[in-house]
Image (cartoon, rainbow, N blue to C red; front, side, top):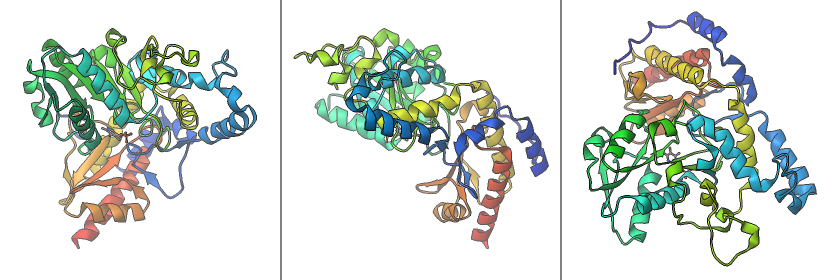
Length: 409
Ligand SMILES: *Cc1c(COP(=O)(O)O)cnc(C)c1O
């Protein structure tokens, strides 16, 4: 992989030109964004899509208020029954992650989905293997869920945590499952999902990918990569709203796997009220309890924003925005870039170390440039190509330079 040469220091005029030619420029109008704010935190909580409030009003007043319990099954023909909401959202998510809708279960948090995926993966893993391999710097909840599940299983497994760069060399025949997050939440570094999955597969190791910072930020191809399981978040780049449901992907070849959280909504026929659990045919078996209708409805409408988005254009703009931000800040002596320059190794965020990172971010937020601080010394900026413009990047970078200068003085 080659490291790209950063573009020359862009001027505001250059960036206005790029905005004028941006094929995604009409997308910003589909979001509600507050005035006086440059929002670089869509990797933590996506902005509000303009069509969501209206949808929620309809769900609350008509479907809940008027139709009441009938809404669970009403308008099933037109696909507007509440029961089918998880499946409908799965169908909209499928093209974003390179999966078939029947391989996706929507609902619960990412953490709970990881628990479900890991239990199933351990169940289908090659017998006798006793290691769960992961990145030592994986997102905390991913590590905690693996620890909790392992203790439930009587500590039968060893949770082996190694630096991301060493994962490939640790794919041995002791490993049952490797559990990785494609884009690191702190550094923005992107792992080679296809390459690592192929290596894992060659050694009989199952893969679970966390797509929290991938889906909606760039094209993901789970089928092409040959991933076994994946999980992800609805409220980051997918803009489903605070606490939006997450999702679980299970490759078709594992569709008949056992599920640990065998709830009635994953039963083949929930309203048969049978005494024994019979799993639904496809990934629907991973839906556990009653669908979260309000939050699923918000996510369902939020995903419509992607209907006419070319994911190659989305990625090209994401790289353009992050390249621009990196160039504009490349001269500051106190900002140390931690995000890789190499396009292939980058997600859609840029992070720097700064000696007073927390205070720097506090001052930026005060000025309306919203990113976040990650302990101990990282300032992190997420670039959502659907609603961040090149001019926004310019103004945000100027604010960062000013704040860094103030803190030096
Ligand atoms: C944001 C994030 C989560 C969030 O998990 P929740 O259960 O939705 O709180 C999980 N994993 C990663 C890698 C994340 O970035």
